[in-house]
Structure formats: C-alpha cells, structure tokens
Amino acid sequence: MKVTIDPVTRIEGHLKVETVIEDSVIKEAKCSADMYRGIEKALRGYDYLTAIQITQRTCGCCPYAHAEAAALAIENALQIELNKNGKLLRNMVIGAYKLKDYVLHFYTLSALDFINISDILNYNGNDFDMLELKKYVLKEISSKKVFPNPLFSQKYKNAYIKNKDLNITLINHYLKSFEAMKKMSEMVKIFGSKSTHMVTIEAGGVTTRPTAERLVKYISLAKESQHFIEHCYIPDVLEVAKRFKEYFKIGKGVDNFLTFDTLLNLDGSYLFTGGFSKDFEYEEGIEPYNIIEYNNYAYYKENGGYKPLELTELTPLTFDEFKQNHTKYSWSKAPRYKGHVVEVGPAAIVINNYLRGKDEKLISLVDKFNRELGIDIKDYNSVMGRHLSRAIISKLIIDKIIEDSLMVEEGKLGFIQLKKPPSNVKGIGLTEATRGALAHFIDIGENGYIRNYEMIVPTTWNISPKDNQNIPGALESMLIGTEIRDINNPVEIARIIRSTDPCLACAVH
Image (cartoon, rainbow, N blue to C red):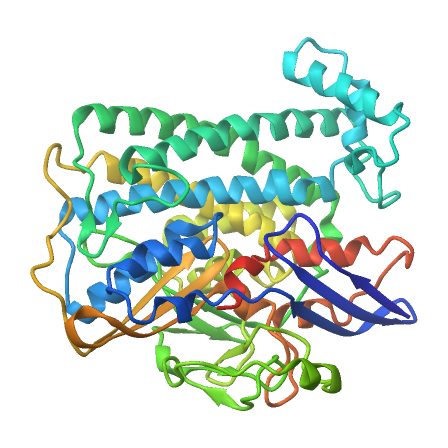
C-alpha cells in the first residue's frame, strides 16, 4: 500500500513524502523537494557583500544563519578576525534567533501532533487568552462551515495525550509561547536592527554600537526568556517525552552525524564544537571538501557527484525528459560527507558534543535527562530525541548569551571596516542553523564581484534523495522500517518528518 503526504503541513516550504507500506511496516520512502529557487545563481556577478543580505532571503525562519555563514565565508576569504565586541554581539543576535526558532518549532509546528487541543473545552479557569480560545473552539466545532479549523477535527484518532489537565497546561504554554517568541525577536532587533532579515551582521562583525540602554534592555528580555525556557519549554518537552517514550525508538535513522562549530567563545573555542561521528564513534574537526553532492536522483541532467564550487550551474531536465524519467524524484541534491549519509540538526549537536566528552555542562544536562527518562545517548537518534535535543541546546544557549551580554564593553563598536574589495579569493563559512549544519562557499573574482556561490543547507542533508550508490537520504532512512499502528491514521510518518523541522525554502538553490 502506498501512503503519500503532499504537501507535508506545518513545515517550511513544499515537501512530498511517498511511502510504501507492507504488513504495517514502511518498506520504501521517497522525499521530494518540489520547489526550486536558485539564489546561488542569482548572486553571481554582484558585489561580494551583497551575499550577506541576499542569502538571508533564502529563509524567513532562519535568515540569521545565512547572514552569519555568508559573513564567515567572506571573513575566511579575507582572513579577518572579529574583535571582542564583534564576537559577543554576533552571538547575542544569532543566539536569540535560535531560541525563537526552537520555541516556534516545538509549540507551533510540532506540539499539535501530541496535544489534544480540544481539551480547551474543559478549561474552567479565568485566564483571558484561554477563555477566548475556548470561545473560538466552541464556535468552530459548532459551525456549519464547509472547512472549519482543522486543528479541532482530531485528524489522528487516539494519538494524543489523554490527561486533560496536562493538555490544558500545554495549551496555556502554547499561547504563552507567542509572547516568549516576541521577546526573543525583540532581543534580535536590539542589535540586529530588525527581525526578520537583520542588517547589522556584516563581514567584520556587528555594526550596532552597544549602548548601556540597549544592553540593559537585552539582558532584561534574555532573563525573561530564560524563565520561559526553564519553566515552560523544557518541562513541556519532558512531559511529552514521558507520555510518548516509544518515540525514543521511532524515527531512528543512520547512526552518522555531522556538526559544525557554532557560537564562538572569546578563547577561540565554541559552545558547540563541530565534528563527525560514524556509528557513534566521534572524530573532531571537519574537512569541507570531503562534502560531495550527488545528482543521480535529482531533476538535473548532470549525474554523479561534485564538490562545492566545482560547477557553476546544473542543467534541469526538460519537460519531456521529466515526463520520461521515472527515477529522478526531487529538486534536492544528495550531499554526503566522506561518502556517508549523515543526519544534521539538534540531535547531531547533542550526540557529537556528548561523544566528544569535553563539555561538562552539556554532559551533565544530558545525563540528568537520561536518568529521568530512562534513555541513553543513542536514543537521541529518534523523534523524541530530536525534540529533547532542542530543549537542551536552548538551555545552553540562553545561559551563554546572558553571560556574553555581561562581557560586552559598552560604547565600543564590534565591527572592523573592510578597506578595499578583494579579488580572486575563495572562502568557506561553516555554522549551525536552527535545523543543523550550514555551509556557504564563495568564489570572489576581480574587484570583489561574486564568481560562484554555493550553499549546502541542513534540510538538503536531511531530505536528500538517494545517492550514486542508491542509498536513501537521512529522512528516508528514518521512515524505512517504521511500524504503522493504524494505516488509516499514519501519525508516525508526520511525527518523524516534523521532528527534523524541514525547511524546503532553504533546500534547493
């Protein structure tokens, strides 16, 4: 039996997932990126500094990461090192944005896979927002609309938390998350100038001057955000995890994980260190040109694999070729690291940094939750492991950016002015976006004009099609082998997909 979800909802962009189910088990899975955008090609011929602004238009959810990766690529090409305030302020901007995205993913994009939102009808308190939501739900379910709000139709039967009091608490925190995200966005705006698509991250640092007023406001909002993370977000993830413990065994993909350095410390180390682990054996450091992207199952005439910047463009299939070709099924290429399918994202960050064995704070936090939930580090390769990883990372990030904000030197600009346009240089920018490992590669020609540009984004890794060896991508591997309890309500498929937080707006350029 074939089960297709097209489009997958509550994600960014257009993703089609096809599965073949036999004896209640997924035997085959295909992830199709149905949207091509082409920002890489659009950058060619423009001034190198435009990359920082234009690549942000790749995504409205994690533009900060593209700004940072583009700036890092230029700084790498020009051999620029940020000053103290530049390092701290950049962390404060991108850290706040990461937090907002993690909260957004859990409450807005994923929580409704687990919460029975109809339990709002059992609410008897006096919270204004909860009462207004209760009125709205009553109105929707009693209406004669052809298409009432689907949130209240309970699409997947018997798949939600059964404890009514817990559902009401989670619904209340769902509403509170909007105010929390607003405060995190305000943190971004203080030094990023605006959110979304900030304008102050540049090659050379951050252009906003840190006044006392800005710092005080940022720290105040950060502490309020810290309270929400510690008293709502983390406890909510743990409550969901306790009631869906089987999801620490569902959605297991490949045991290979790729991460890049992110959130620079003043001593040159990072909050999260990049590395690669194969079968839970960790090796530190990344060799970017060990990345090869394969096109054997993508909608391009060029087959085989290519290293970053090796090609200036790919040739799409013609419409007639598209109709005749029954093997290619996605606009996305299939990136591989050292020939391996890898998972990127929050679980990869937690797993790799735990295996690295040097981050005592992360290890302590992971061990604490492992004891509480009866799991181990290998269980983070799962649906629930990915949700838990985001919560762990959020705690570490909020603590860091508060610490960083207290070290900023008031009034001193965290920006180094570039003197003249570079010529004939290449640079690489590696960082971690909300969804995982992000790489930007820039080739700057004469007088600072972009000759070639390439982005390899987290979702490209995770939703990739098969490669030259016919090996499925990371998300396809997570789906294959999954048991579907109710073929008419395949909630497992949706939960696995959304646990990776796909962003198809980023995936194909």
